[in-house]
Length: 498
Image (cartoon, rainbow, N blue to C red; front, side, top):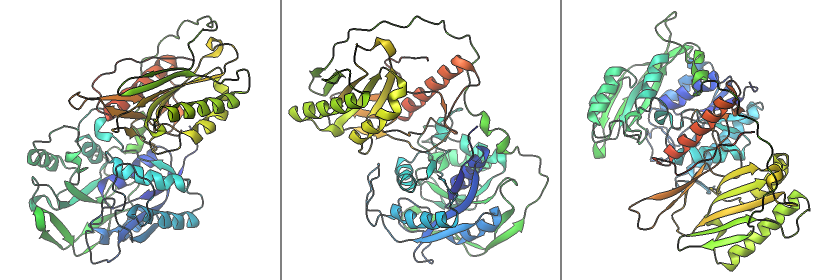
């Protein structure tokens, strides 16, 4: 198992950011600090922010003593400037307020090397936190990412898991037509509250949009207690006031709060630290595949191109000067590709997928930075990299194929946080790219990156169940990425062993 990370935990007071801390600890990481952004004017209970929960912010200072972890806070000075789903740095955007806050924490805790967030289904939130974390050299951790879409595939499973470890979180704001002020102050993880939520939002059911867990802003929560391994004290909520706002929104205004000692020795709940490591699906151990004789060199058509009204493909691009170094070959290939695209008046930004063939995988670490420089924009193409050994044509160590969608509807899935969902993206490629099909009633073609058997939470190769276990885990990653893009079936896939 790799050495644990030293984590800064972003907290809003909500159930998800506090539950994420438990998962960080379950993965062997240490929480060195809590970080929070609050309204510039303290009297403003709930500001118009796309990024941060601020309702209940007056309670946040109590978390330092409740958890026994130092807390750092800073006002929100920016506003939503870049409202696109995928984030690129924008001056005066509220996202950028994280930079000075985290920089201050890192000065006080130079050992900090990771950042935790409670993002579940919000690409908007996740991409912004990832952008800041990576710029500061922090590993982003989002252990709740896609949580309701993991087994048992129920929206309410997140709330059930919170209840199982003893986390309490009160509903302090409602913003859905189906929820009224009667929900304020209820413990969201109690089965009676979950049943009431399902009934009030019956049209959502278990559809997968996150309504039952409040992911669409239907309600917001305040965590007040949890398992004793993390929570040293419980937050006590005293006098409150129910406030009905415009548009049917309701807020529980907290007028008095404090800390109280926790009851010890409660054996009703199992600590999440005992079982979170068992989340990865395993296959039954099987026999190793029969060893095959190495293939002979193949004769492949190289440097071929094809146009259709919606797609351009360039297949098996190779260097015009074979037998030179692999680095020189890839550089020449990318120059050739740039020339081809320019001649065809096609933008590089619409390349959706690439296939990179290598003679030896040992050259990958040298070639990857060259590739990354060429594909350096937001949401780079999905990629499959395969080492072909002696099957490559003589004198050729690198070949590249690309698929470019001519339609302007390209969308990427580029998750860089560690989670239980699928491996974090640590290279110059997206997990998946989708593009609309013309006259297909909303249909899309989805290009998925190659998957290897990394344990998502730790990013280590899974080795406990041999080849069969690795195949099943890689296929699980492929399926989960596809589900995240709305796929109901896969046209084809290839399983490679090494």
